Image (cartoon, rainbow, N blue to C red; front, side, top):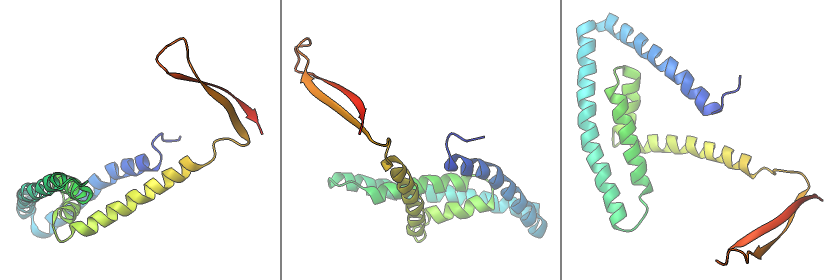
Length: 168
């Protein structure tokens, strides 16, 4: 069976199954070590801290975006920061330790540049793969011979292209 989305969809499906299993396993391990109530307390404190960090870092990212647009430049770094803050905050609000770790990596000011570089690396790889695939020749020896002429019937100066595909 071939997935229509390719590798990214397959990775997403694996993560959608594996991450909750990992989180439950980690919760059981931590709960066995320190007890149920301390584990729940840690999760609540992480969620509250995550909400506070989302607000603080989100405000900072929003101001940086506004400043970037205000100076007339494209705020690409600020957009990346805003996206990382949003994703990191969502991960912190989910119950679990593994997602909290990644969420803190995305949210904290000192670790966000590393997270931005990692995300940029994976995005660049995907873009590189897709552009190489798009640049591949579509046909072998096909030449389109055509002519563009004004369409007198429309009267608006529009053009019509006539042509045919021939073998070289």
